[in-house]
Amino acid sequence: MAKDLLQVEGLQVWFPVRRGFVESLTSKEQKYVKAVDGVSFAIKEREIFCLVGESGCGKTTTGKAILRLVEPTGGDVRYFGSGLSAAMMKDAVKRSVSKKLMTAKEGEEALAAGTVDVRKLTKDKMKMLRQKMQMIFQDPYESLNPKQSIYDIVAEPLMVNSIGANEAEREKRVAKALDDSGLRPPKDFMWRYPHEVSGGQRQRVGIAGALVLEPQFLVADEPVSMLDVSIRSEILKLMLDLRNNKGLTYLFITHDLSVAYVFSDRIGIMYLGKIVELGPTEEVIKKPMHPYTKALISVVPKPDPRMKTDKIILKGERPDPAHIPPGCRFHPRCPYVMEKCKVEEPEPIYVSQEHWVSCWLAAGEGKAE
Ligand SMILES: Nc1ncnc2c1ncn2[C@@H]1O[C@H](COP(=O)(O)OP(=O)(O)O)[C@@H](O)[C@H]1O
Ligand code: SF4
Ligand SMILES: [Mg+2]
Image 1: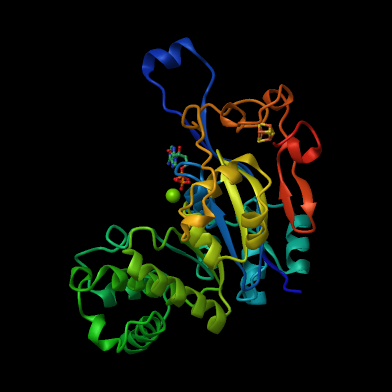
Image 2 (image 1 turned 120 degrees about the vertical axis):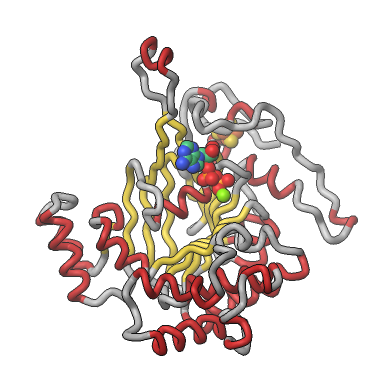
């Protein structure tokens, strides 16, 4: 069985809410936007794990916190990547111990297990790890600098990380990354600017920029949601090929359940900063347990009109991570809400070996019909 490449445990990202001068005088209490509020999951080597949920539920922040592009407030992120040499690990652990980010004992344990706790690395050592963990962004229009040539864009991570002895070597690596991303022949694309290629090709440039450092793990944040439907499947196929040929592992973020269904091995359904249901994709989609998952599935357009299902339209206000409801955070919108749901938060309950759900109904309370 494949081993875990990444383990995320109780991850939290809370953003302090900025207050006006008067408010800060009248109230001492600092309020937070709890964008990520206790997220736990593991991703196996070569696996595609998908985080799904409506806009604002904390998907992007989760991805960024794993790479420490935003600073987590709490929790652990452990990376078991084999791409780090023993010397690099030793140096990273030594620096983190001397900076008191981890104790000497934690340092010894990390070296013995060959893992690093991402949160406990110094910033410069995190840079080293980030070569193995890269992010592909949602918007290929926004994430590429229009003033840079495609060569400059893809070569930038090499420059930043001082990789490649000279220009010729860097050019070779850029050409390889473009080729791997399906921009062939690379020399036809290298000296063009982002506006001189199509939307799908621009996203391929984004992917090449992530691949150029030869990472092991990619966070792909809605990589196809800004693209025409006709191009989406080409980009998804490229990402699947990269997994198969290069052994990449993905955290794939999407608000679109149908994309998650065709693309991922396992899926985590996220609601208001937390995963509420997690399991093998096929099982979660065909046998959803959480009322929120059921509602999401009910509104996915079906290819065959005979497959018509009743749409579950969620009532209530749009959830706000600055005001998370007590008890089950979904309770103000849940069609099955019980008194207990309003005061007690449900713990994850396993409904099969790999499939869990946080809902009192699964614990045998109340009735789902
Ligand atoms: N830097 C930030 N400061 C304050 N709030 C933020 C910041 N980044 C994200 N948020 C808030 O955190 C919540 C989750 O955002 P995000 O992770 O982007 O969600 P998603 O990717 O699921 O749409 C949103 O309410 C968003 O407004
Ligand atoms: S715990 Fe209660 S409110 Fe929450 S999803 Fe289950 S039934 Fe609904
Ligand atoms: Mg997002």
